[in-house]
Length: 346
Image (spheres, rainbow, N blue to C red):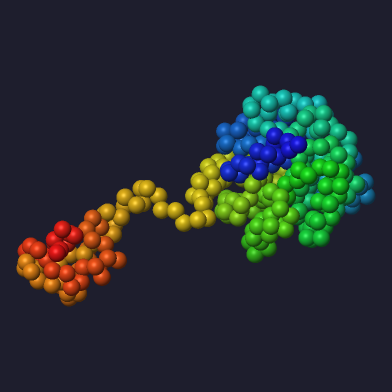
C-alpha cells in the first residue's frame, strides 16, 4: 500500500519544497529554530538537516591531513564537524519544534544508527545523499524501514542509479523519488543538464526532483518546468555567515521566490492539448479584425476584393469567411470604412 507522503508527491501539482538547512545552523539550536520559522514563512513544505557525527563522517587520517587548514570561526575541520553535528536529543528538540510549527522535519542519515533514530522519530521519508548512491548495503537497510526514500543521484552514472533502485526494490519498497543533482558547489550552468529530470522520469517511471546547488533562483524554477516534483535547496538566513554552505544557499527572499513563482509556473504549464479559454474567446471581439468597406458601396453592387479592407473590432464578418462575401450583392447603401454584416448581403 502506498504511503500518504509518496501518494501526495505523485498526485500534487505544486513541487514539494525542501529547505536544506543541513549544517547551516552552525551548531546553534536557537539559530536552527529561527531558520525553521523563516522556512515556514517562505511557504516551504519541509526543512532538512543532516544526521552525522565526527566519527561517522570522515576517517581519522583525513582529519589529520586537513587539520593544517583552520577556520577562523570554528577551528580545524574536526572541530567544525564536531560543532555542527546534532545529538539525538537535539534531533528530538528540532522534530518537536517542526511539529509545533506545522512544517515537516527530515534529515539525511549517514549511519545505520542514524537511520534507526530517524525511524523512531517517524520521519515521512529518508533522504539519502549522493555519496551513498553506491552504498548498497546502506540502501538496503534504509529501504527495509518501509518509508519513502528520496535519493540524490549526484556523481552517479545511469547504471549506478539503476543498481541502487534495484537494491531498494528487492526489499519490497517501491517508494523512491530520484533527485537529479550535480555534486558541485556551485556548478557551472553548462553541466547542470536539467533535461535529465525528464530523462530519469521516462527511464525509471518514478517521480523525479532536483537537488539544487546553484546560486539564485532561475535554475530551480527552470527545473519545475521540466517536471521536478521535489525541489531541495540549501537555505540560510544570511549568505555571509561563516560556515560551510551559506554562500551557495538561498536566503529567505530567494526561497520565497522559489516557492511562490514555482507555484505560478505549475499553474501556467497547464495542459498539453490546445485550449482557448473563455476569456480569450471573448477577446476575439476586440482583438480580431472584421471585413469593412474600403469605399462607399451602393445598393445592388457586387462586392469585389478591392472594395474591402480588414480592421478591428472582430464583431463583424471574420476574415476567414471572405469567400462567402466576394461576389455577393449588397441590399443597402454602406458607407466607407463600415463593418459589413450578413444582413447587408442578398
